[in-house]
Image (cartoon, rainbow, N blue to C red; front, side, top):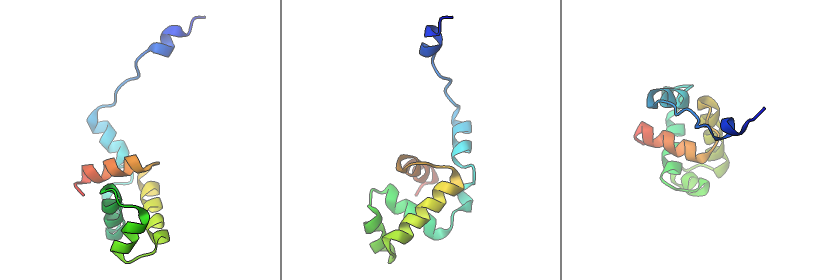
Length: 90
């Protein structure tokens, strides 16, 4: 059995509609206002500590907000968080 052709086959590209739908599995409306604010700061390139200072919180609270966002929307990394923020216009 020759698997070489399967290894080099191009993976299907998801359509933009299905990609955005999967990114918003929980829906952006599910985010609390402070979660959206934390997301906005992180997407702008601020660190957790800088975000915490601007929001008047501890960095642990910022981390908790971002963990909740990841859980609600099925996001696993900061790059996806940033892409979400851009798509939401934050």
